[in-house]
Image (cartoon, helix red, strand yellow):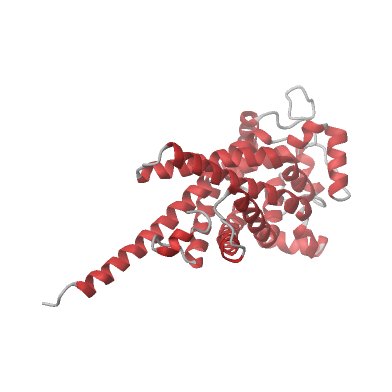
Length: 332
């Protein structure tokens, strides 16, 4: 179902661009509710200069369980949904733009280039380009979400609107696009690998179990997406960490409660300083919660998207059957 399918044009039913956008938005919304706590922990790990170790005297966070307990004790349960409003706006917008772009690009590849768009390499390229278009669209929301998650107590930003006004006045409009370079560098292979590996695992599952019931297909979509998410995140993780470090530039005052703060002079300087002061392992800080988040996030994103597309397709088929039944039934 994910990506253009020429068979759907010949009677199997194909979702319209509006239905694709709605399915993508709903998948993003529902998935975000589930993964936001993991995202908070991941971002806290990424922004910590000190090593994530129990033996590091200045380290605030040591591991997932310790970080969860610390955040809950110091900031309350609501802290795990810090930045949830901009994160939801991000997820809804990102899901719509990404899937609409992906369906359009795979159809373009199939029709304009006479190339089978249902193979992994086509899904890699189209998935990467679709994610880049979605990233440029939602980058300001991603920066706002990161700022909300990153701030401690007392809060610098009282509300979403206050954050927007403060950032614009003090740092200028380009502050909303901080970290865009590493984001685009990372998002193309990350999303490309997601779609490509999802495609590969789908083919494997279809080959292994050719005759499947509907509930089995839904479970397979979830598992294929989870595996694709873990592999993709591991391969591209350092770029995500550098993006988060750059997004909180100029925000040092709110970071004092979490340990050391560091300033960077662009993407390459950020990569150099992290590697020099924190070692190569520093580029993978927060990988464990990030992998867990990627498994849940990618799995449920594809699961919800496929589910809603099937619902829309079944609804259209039902309406078409009713129209056909009315036309063919003789009047009494």
